[in-house]
Image 1 (spheres, rainbow, N blue to C red):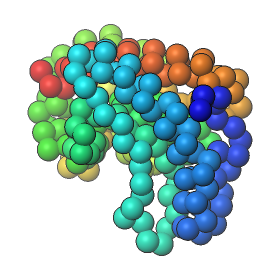
Image 2: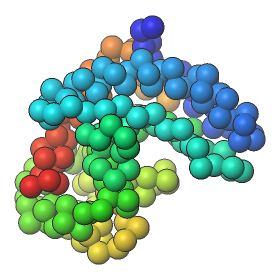
Image 3: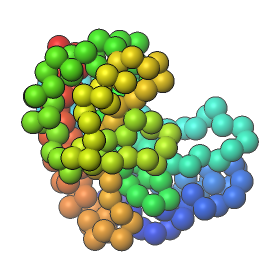
Image 4: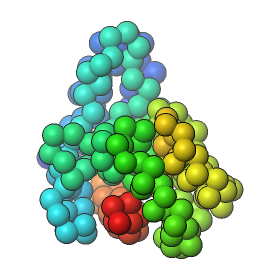
Amino acid sequence: MVFKGFEQQDFDTFLIHGLDERMEAIQERIQPKFREIGDTLAADLSAMIGSEMFLHIAKHARRTVNPPQDTWLAIAANKRGYKKHPHFQVGLFDDHVFIWLAFIYELPNKDKMAQNFLDHLKMVHETIPADYMISQDHMKKDAAPLHDLDLEKILTRFRDVKKAEFLIGKHIAPTDPLLKDGDRFLAFTKETFESLVPLYHLAYK
């Protein structure tokens, strides 16, 4: 199958009531698209980073009552899992697509990674375009462009607060024509990931 883009029905998935009903729609509408784009993006990232990267598609297996508010694919250097590693994400809430380089709270060395960023704050600032979005919690929609934020304060919190997270990337509205063109979306996502690879490497410095 060839990825043709996301459509309004994909976003409407998150308006469906009931865990089983919403999960069925995620599996039927969205996960096939993740599979279509995931292998390509994993191969692209493997080439950019210089080591093999592996695709993971969120299963939401721990959920027993509340249906997921979003869903995603993740690409990480570990074949068995991604949450304990810096990883790249593409996913959807009901009102946007997100493209992230994600450092979430389950990282075992996130304090050291945060300190690497703080020690090279000028480079981090120069690497992240001012209009890129920053999130501090992958479970919430809340995010703001870098030019509205105090990056040093965010990175200090990421280092010192156990549950703090650091995600960098782009939001795309459902009405953006980019989402209707599979090739354009893939190229845009690859370009976004490529711009963030220096931060991925810096985290491991």
